[in-house]
Image (cartoon, rainbow, N blue to C red; front, side, top):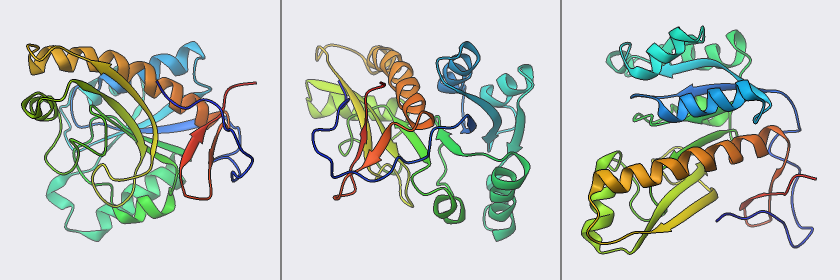
Length: 228
C-alpha cells in the first residue's frame, strides 16, 4: 500500500529528528481527519498533540470540535487574505504562540501562504482523496474528486499523503493507498470507502514523521522507514 523500507543508503537525514509532535491542523469543513489525528494523539498511536486548529470558517465542524476539546483556534479569514499581515499573523501563531513543528492539512481549501510554506518546508502534509498526480489541483476537492475519477472510467482510486509546496496538490508524494472499485459505485459511496483509507494512512504518515522515520533520496523523493 505504501513504501516501508529503504533499499539503499543514499538518503538524507530525517525530515525532523524524533521528537514530541506539536501539530497544527488546517481544516475548512467537518474535520474528520482532524478528529482521527486528535484521537491517535490522545491514544498514543502518534507521539504528538494537536495544539491549534486553523480554519477560514469560524462555524466549521473542525472549529467546533477544537473548542469542545480545548484546542486553540486560529481563524485565517478569507476576507483578509489580500492583506500580507494576516499571513504574517498566521506564521507568528505557528512559530511563536504554539511552537508548531508539523502542519497537517485536513480538508483545507485555501493555499497555504508562501511565508508558511517556506518556514515549514518539508514539514507540511496534506491528504488528498485520489491517487495523485491524477485528479488533483485547484477546484478538485470533496465529491468533485470522486466524480472526476468515476467519469474517467478509472478502475482504481485511493488517497495520497504528500508534502505541501506553493501550489495545489503538487508537492512530493510520501505515501498512497490504493483500492479498486466497481464502475457502478456512486461518488458518495467511493468517498466513504476512501475516507477509511485516509484515516489509516494519515495516522501512519504523521507517526512516521514525529518518530524521525522519513528521509529523502537524492532525487527529492521522501520515503518512510519501518519502525525498529
